Each structure stands twice: as C-alpha cells, then as structure tokens.
Amino acid sequence: MTNSPQDDFQARLNRINTAHQDAAEERQQHRQDKAGLLGHDSRARYVLALLGALVSGVLVLFIVRYVRMQLIGDLNTSSVSSILTDLAISLAVSWAIRNALQLKDPEYNAAQSIGVTLMAFGMHNLAFWAPGPMAALLSPTWVYHQQQNGVPNSLLVAGQYIPLTWGAPAHDPAEPELPAVVYRN
Image 1 (cartoon, helix red, strand yellow):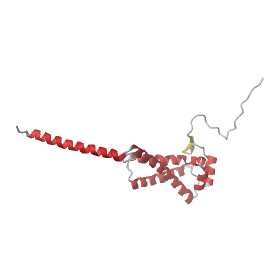
Image 2 (image 1 turned 45 degrees about the horizontal axis):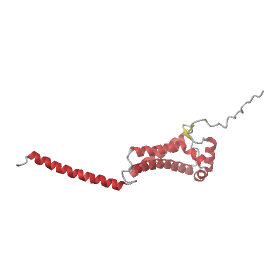
Image 3 (image 1 turned 180 degrees about the vertical axis):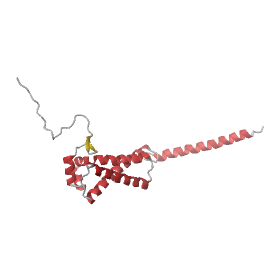
Image 4 (image 1 turned 90 degrees about the vertical axis):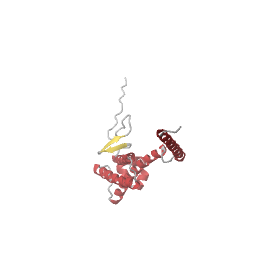
C-alpha cells in the first residue's frame, strides 16, 4: 500500500514541527539556566535598570546644579527660572546619555525624567537632611539660604513649597502660638 502525497506531506510537516518544538524547549531551558537572579531576562535586572535610570536622572540634575553654582556662583536655586533652566539642561544631558547607551525603552526614559524632575523640585531637602556634606559639596551659603527660606520634606513647585508629610500641619514659626486659656473658679 502506497502513501498518498498528502500523507507524505503531513508526515514531513510533523517531523519538522517536532524538531522545532524540541529546539524551542532546549532554548527555553538554556535561557532559564543562564538567567539566574540577574540574567538578561530576569525581573530583578529590570527593576535594577529602572532604579539605575532614576538615580542617573537625580545625579544628572545634581551635577548640572553643582557646575552652575561653581562656574557662575548662582546660589538661588529656588527661582522658577533657575529650576526651568536646570530642568532643560538636565533633560538634554539625560537624552544624550540615553542615546549614547542606546536605552530606547520608554520606561527608562520616564524613570530618568522622573529622577530629574524629583531632584529639581526637591533638592532643597538635602540642605535639611545632610547639611554638612551639602555645605562641603555646594556652598555653606546655599545650605544656610535653603534652611532659612525652605521648608523641610517638601517639593518646590512654581515658587511654592508643597509639604510631603500628611496629617497635622506643622507649626509656622512666624505665627506666635497662643497659650491655652484655663478658667478657674
């Protein structure tokens, strides 16, 4: 009994399909063996890459402000024009870094841009959290200016400080606190 051409063709397709499935299983097993904790396709590596992009955005803005303070001597980092200038320069430098490292994924771009923006609006907090190192790195005058005019744990947006703490509002030292009146009979 001879096989029909259709049966021969179907047998050949089954043989090819089996070979492809075996090769795909071997590749998958090889990827799993190779991936490990920080392998090419691991989630930990993805999270670390996003955190690295966020930190690089923070560092880019810090370096831009450091250079501006050292070269120009402009210590007023809380004005809207200086914030916008620092943002523009930092985003341009971040764009150049992304292109040099060929990071084309939108999540890396977003993480780096978020890092730049957070640092632009929250750098004054470093004067409260680490005044000694910031005075040594940037300027003691800048730290003093930020501590006198700024609000700790806040974001500076459009010249207004927005506190990051929730709950009871902090006492404003400009307003004197009235003592409680106690009536006695």
